Length: 409
Image (cartoon, rainbow, N blue to C red; front, side):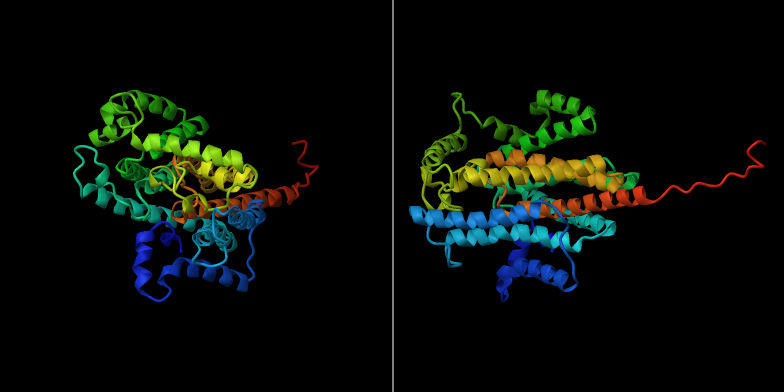
């Protein structure tokens, strides 16, 4: 199932076959059913009941939206808001499926390797697409939808997340050959991300690298500072032009940045009007806003508009728990595999938190599906770590009786 999670354009090849559009859903349910038949269960974690309550709450908010007249009743699969909710709920099902079937260190290692393989496939697709065009100067029309199938910004968020994940993971790889392979994957992913021309992903990368410097390698802080001072002389011309587009020659915000400010002002009015429960999940896109746009271009604003204060609390707790899982594993584990997994997950989550400031990078299964797989195996790794520690503590210390005749020799 893992390689299919981010690679939407590969899944699209199944559309010509019966139930081809539901291939991922079928795979997820097949894993869950198979696990249940074999008596598997999910590990203990507050994230599982939290997702259950959050999913139910999101569905109820859609009925609030229906009562307000902002959305249709969420009954039929043809209803846009219900379809969005159904697709979103597939994410926690993937999380649960992974938690059920990953039970030991070997499986954890296998999942990480499959994640690396999936990232390499995405990198290859991105680079082949980018390098097929001339980038002597930036041109918005040349940006592709990418292998995730939703656009360059979404692909960029995915690449930034997993570039820093494997950067953190590589810190604890002992074999030099493997370490170089992982660093090569990181470099390739950053290069692919560079040519997505997503300014939000650039910020997410820089913030995550600084955090890596604070947690593990202080030299990276100096490197990041030098880069910020010299980036215009280092990056390709097209990338520099893209970053400089934030403001025009008159010092005003360029069109896309100005659109976001206008959207946020509209969203502010909606938040003030419906602060507790919002206007209903997936309801913002059902009405037309400034310049025909249907997204807030900031996921946190979108959560507040659609699900209110209650939904925002759910989201903040989810993010806190995900960060905590990675950090605890990084700090508590003795096994280098687990420590690298924990640090990598924490960095990927930091990248995710920053990237969502620039748009919805959360509800797309293609972006966060693999991230939740890593959360699930991190919870299992944390459980294995605690079990091993408890087992060692329970083993009584064996004392060797002293031979009295030898004690005075």
